[in-house]
Image (cartoon, rainbow, N blue to C red; front, side, top):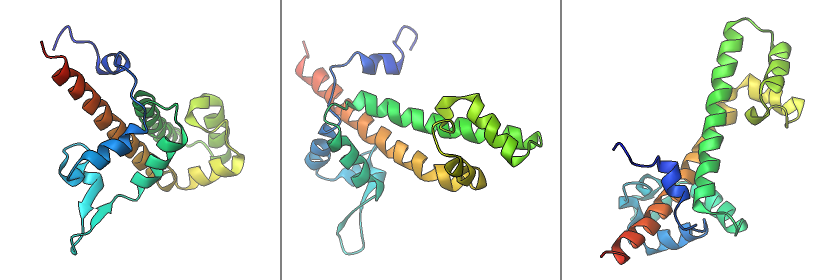
Length: 168
């Protein structure tokens, strides 16, 4: 695919799609659980009742609460959250392996990068995070993945509409 613009550039060049359109897409899908992108977020229980990943309503509410939010921005927010969690984990692993004491580790993390989230948080939050980074970041990462999947699928729907209505 040499010559293709990178994905994020192509998505940024699309007409903005409101993140609130995610709900409309889900409502239009007859069987969202069979969708290859967002299907794992939906299902049917043993009684035939629809079930949904518990993070979906939270993310949808966030999308509804920010009418100015676009799917592209939501996708970037999700990627950023996952990236920050991954970098935090990698930095902590390296600093702990170097034998840095816990309090020094916290000070070092706060000084390294404001985007890691430590500088903006209270010392107590950072200590809790250091005690169990997996638990502290696992929910954040899962929520970010749900955010990215819903935003990406909605962007894809908009692109599909462009492609099928502008055929020449």
